[in-house]
Image (cartoon, rainbow, N blue to C red; front, side, top):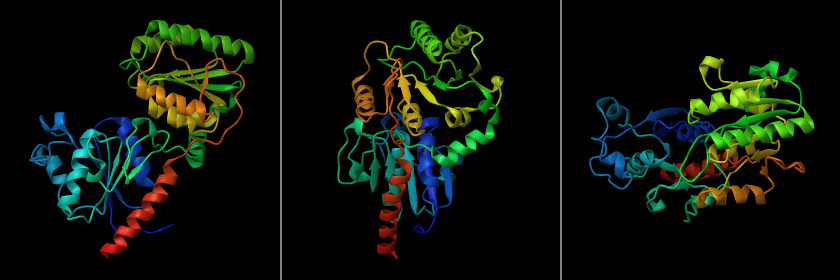
Length: 326
């Protein structure tokens, strides 16, 4: 592996999904990582990354001290707010900082050295990398660690079905009727093949819908986890032990992580999806990575693991830049 000089800043807002993507990529570069969570005041928070003038002063005093020289060798941002500050680092460092932006920054990608935007964003450019899904930490070691953390899942009846719940978003049906039909589909599947259900709610899942799921599953072997009141977070263990996964259709990140596991992945959709999300679902279906809830013919396919491949590409690009500067 190429040894890169200097350190890497990861810049995000408070969104867990953005943090997860940026940190997953940074950790694969083999550099010391420093995570900055930056939240500028309005109007910069509204207009990021377009409005750059005065953006450093838009941070509170603590964040201004963090976002200060000496500048890093590499900066990786994820999300629109982070894009403002990764954009600034190129002129601030006089081009010495290699800047990477994850997700479509909504301005010309030439403001960064590399932009990583999923295919369904339809962003193009000479410096744009277009993976099928989102970046994530899921690989064989991550899954092994998850199994080691929750060995009791091995005793549950097979197939062990992980159920990943997202939450409402514009254009996606996610309500009581949706949960009721999802429960019905899970029971129908279990009547055919037996097994257990490991249900994971996310921060976006309304508590009332989690409780509806909990009551609807009754005494089915497994668990329903919705927060720390249910114990420590078993998410890596659920993915590590799952024989198949059922994921609600709303989250690109959850679907991407599920497809990185290497087991069959199913989803359940009521009605239609927003265009961008439908493009992502269609790409997964075309690649043989995503099936309807009731699909039974699910031949194995290689897991979708794009993070390491992109990290290898970035490592070469950064090493080339450092060679030019050095």
